[in-house]
Length: 425
Image (cartoon, rainbow, N blue to C red; front, side):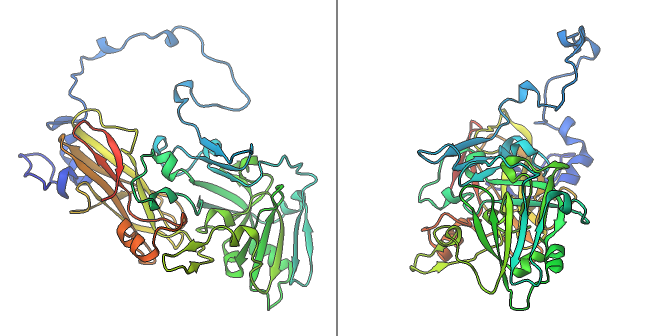
């Protein structure tokens, strides 16, 4: 499945099975001029431009809050509730239908343990207590007087991609397999500032954060995590949505989603972990030898190709852009390599700026599909030196008795008809 030598004037192939060097491709103008270009349809000039109905009459009036085009009706979250409940479960972000790195507020994934509480912001309070010199209670109005900071950060459920531990490849689209992942611009007050004001005692090494939902969802958080944590009031410039924690939530950049407690009402400083039900019965990795990994907090280095992916099939031969997302809870993405031949050869993808620590990074690489079978993969490296492992290496280390923290390389197979499906390679 190696590459053939390009004809004179064509861009050099950077790796096997049609992956190309992006800069050389753009310099050659190959998208428009080379054989197998994106479009072979000739352009006939102004005669092709029709006067469409929407050009002949006034459009819609103003609205109080803008909505997507009706032609984008497929770009929605999918959701599933636990049997016998209406609000316990998750909704998933349509990653394969988005671009860039920021998730719109209305598409940010959700994970609820007892539905979405309808909280009156004037009645809501945040308590900081425990091993502190001065227990404090904050209203929303009081928090708004503190200095605020803005941070772009991803949030990923620890159980995202858990289906990839299964013995056989799950035939799911990207939304179903990877959709418990989103990235937003969060604005709020640094938790460290509030803890300093409360006067944390020296023996306090942990925090327990509790939400105001009916499940009282709570998690233990190491004190060091408070250095980067935000008590977030805004999400992408507007108040945090109810489904994502209104009127305020905890944001712990890089840490598994369940620790980013929504509807935050209480933070208690403690000497040791509290061992809440949400961190003992769940979010623990059971190894094949019977032992468990507890308190595996940061999300490991990870990436996935979003386009093409299952359900987004190829339509004809020629040039395509392979695009995807990479992220790490340990720092900044420094490199993403892409393969079109199941890992036999790799080429470095272009990383879309800005590349930020503990945020989603978009990667892109040109690909010329010539109609043969291909297996598309991406492999991320982060600033801590972590390299995304193969699925086989991850399973060999951890076994397959868990659903948490899968970060192995994901493989999409493309057949001769352009159909894309999930495989293990």
